[in-house]
Image (cartoon, rainbow over all chains, first blue to last red; front, top):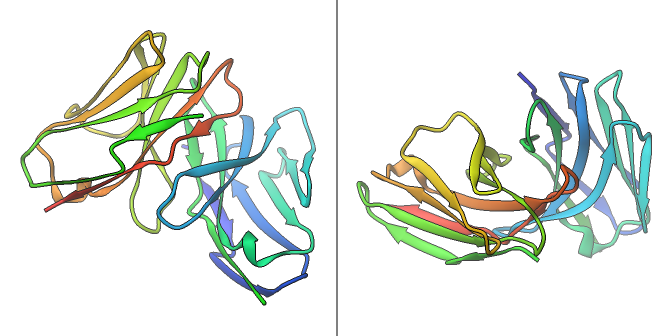
Length: 112
Length: 109
């Protein structure tokens, strides 16, 4: 059974700081990994998708890496801004179908 | 994008509810998730070309339908207090990136 863990559960940083969010998963036989952003009470916004054959993906100030063999992914956010404040969720697709297994998220607060 | 209705819903225990989702155009797979407060979303089931082809650890009183016009439904019978959650639908094509709707907040009293 796939299990996904995200560390830390919460993070507070000053504006402008670079930061790293961590995600680990127990079964390395994944098809892909997706990072999402969720604002309070809202749906999920897809940030980055990494296929199992890829090592990293970049979008603007975001960079996600994947080490499938060790069951780890990191989301790097450069030059953080108050608008980055949200909960960040990672999810892996494994097994049959399109089922995603999610972590419980990292709640990020970027302070002025 | 993916849209869902209604935005919020209040029901009482024992009632039945239908939640609706409109998938992104051209997407042939829709999945439904339940997200309790402070938790990550939990997979309920998915539909591919109008047939259920995967289910998570949810009882049969959770059921769904997918229609040819990119719309789908999640039905929950005999509502329980623990069914209170944010319900999310997601659509995808070719097993790639999944796009989520804004969710429906269900409160069961």
